Picture (tube, rainbow, N blue to C red):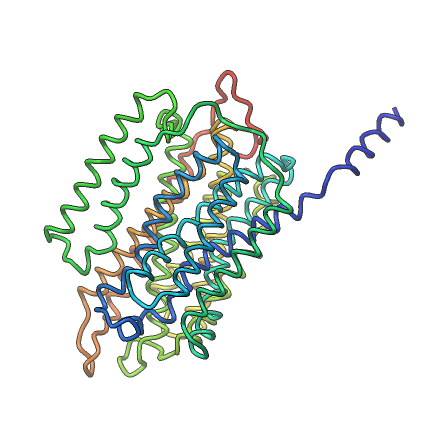
Amino acid sequence: MSTRGGDERASLSRTPPTWPIVAVLAFAGACSSFMFTIVVPIQAELPELLGESREATAWVLTVTLLTAAVTTPIAGRLGDLYGKRRIVLALIAVLVVGSVIAGASQSLPVLLVGRALQGAVVGVIPLGIAILRDHLHEDQIGGAVALVSATLGFGGALGLPVSALIAGNSDWHLLFWMAAALGVVLFALVSWLVPVSTLRAPGRFDLPGAIGLAIGLSGLLVALSQGDAWGWTSAGTLGFGLGGIVVLVVWGLFELRLDDPLVDLRVAARPPVLITNLASIAMGFAFFSSNITLPQLLELPAGTGVGLGLSLLAASLVVMPAGLVMMAMSPVAARLTRRFGAKALLVSGAGAMVVAYTVAVVASSEVWQIALVNALIGVGIGLGYAAMPILIMHAVPATETGAANGLNALMRSLGTSMAAAVMGAVLAATAVDVDGVLVPTRAAFDLTFLIGLAAAIVAGGLGLAIPKPRRLPGEHPSLPDDVA
């Protein structure tokens, strides 16, 4: 008996530590989310810097969102087929190339190419979560997934003031050279510390499915992102939106006929997966609604009677603690998952966001009140985003975690895109002229908070409706039964 115990202890002592893997993948997640905020400090100045219209330079942010949404599910499937670490390294390499192009750019078309390539790195987050499932003990997965998921908010929140400082004190190209340097460091760390994934899915890559998904998603997301500028009933918005939906319907029918589809829609239609993905849309909507509204409240001139008149840097420092709260919730999320399950974690996260938006409706006229609201949203996202990958991984075969997490990440992106469109439309529709500045009314901001509140309630309701996944013959999930 003692010999056996000694052998087990010796075996455990020979097991390589897993914290470097978690740390590197968390760093990768932070770097990827940083790519979205890196241009925020210079967005308003780009028309003058590049000699282009404001509508044209808006694509500097939009093109990154489009690439991220399209690349994420495709990268997930490639990771399942050919190795997750290999695809993570490829995405980081694309980030470095894109950052170098953007750093050397002197015109808008070249900058857009660089920004589009930068967006591909977002696929490392669902792939990183799938790697955690492959290499970590089941007792470690909850906390590790929570930490990597939290970097979605942490990287952006921390990156915003850093970007503001750099843009305010140096040439704006330095932002992209910094991104390239981060990519080189990240590539080296992943190559050194993240082990090769030996778990592979059978089959081959569905190239027609990837092309169809890219076309359909691009049409839909262009309509959502540009609808406010083009007009929601304009030919361009309706053409891209309806065209994207038609392509996605045809794509879905095509995928159902394949033995090796890009996205296994039959697995995606299982109630635990489907309802979790729907909850992800609502959670992403509720999260990004605050990203649209709260900074505007902080930065609008105080003389308008609505805003608080903070600078971009000061506003960034007010919203930054939400990312820190998300990180701080990682160990809490792990303990709650082990004790109550991931389903309860998702519902708790939605509940925290319900409280946040309720506070926002009642009191959001002072800096400290907005900071409190943002911190509560950080709690909600820290819990909710930690729960969703666990729920997904428990409901799909181990060989499909990359694609399934990629699809879940896409659902969150769809929610954020919808939030940007809806919140932008609400605020723009009620804007009034105050000393030559178009300013949304206080009633408009209250309406956005109510919409965010409704989205959080929907996310919580869907979370309650998630059934316990049923194991099918031949499937051996590596997560314990009590996570859901």
